[in-house]
Length: 439
Image (tube, rainbow, N blue to C red; front, top):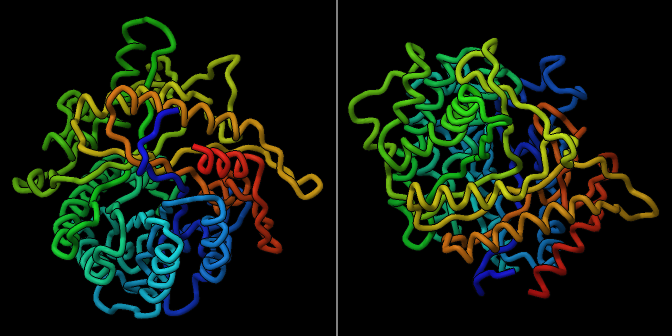
């Protein structure tokens, strides 16, 4: 495989999924604390109160990352740990934790990739309408300024938002994530306000950084028609338009894609005249989260885009029911590079959930190793074709709280015994460490 000499290899986590300590050192409540408190929202009835106890075990976790040869680690800051009310009063103990984390990473030669928002909106802001309230975008900009001013260029890269598509659609239309709404008009307005928040945050971060890279992280997947019927082809095109182009176009072209806008009809968001210019801030990089593709058929019973996902019989699937499809990563990377001309890309998340078991102190997960081998090969091919890739961050560093799935899905390179908090490197982690060291 072909990777540049200064390429970043590491892994990723997010605050609510690994930190725990939700009631410690002045952290305020988030929408995920509230969502988990409602019976039936989480499949196993769990929550992130303890998670992986990374808040207390970060030092050992950093040491283990260094032993694996990582030179990068992506994490998110918990907004309610910094601003418990969402804006206004700053919590020094929250900043101090991330000081310890960032300084610990730097001491081991690990580049910090800091994500400002991985879905844990402070509850007081949700009480005022959450992301459906345009004012939340300006609250986020204030939060971004606090972080940028405090950490500056100690951080290698800032991402304003993680998967705003998921935060909007899964949280406000499908109802499977916090805050649990099911309103498409609200969803599209939320997505627009998230884009406003991104643009305003980029401006605030720029004011306090010189060498740190500023960007955003989007989840993407190719949409493929399961047959050649024109309606199926159109459904796949529009499905991909919503999943991929809806946010990419407004970020890099300064407008929403006209065909998808027309498809949403009267549900499109309210946009003010100056919004597009604010959203279309120049970016240093773009993080891509990739897991699988969508294979779809046309279904007239479904709302726009009338795309129903179907299984690819004979393919390997994860316990999340996601197809192994490494070719899709190469496809997405090439398409983004050609279509949007982003100056720098990195893989911010890529991984697979499997039914892992500890046997004699080891976790044998050959399918995960296969997944990483084939997807890293896809990344290498994209680099050979001229895609400006600078890093690969596996999802996830360790098994963790997998949102609406609770602790039922294991994505980690490290197995976590949630009763004891023992970490065990899975076979795939040993393979990944050897891969990094033997390049």
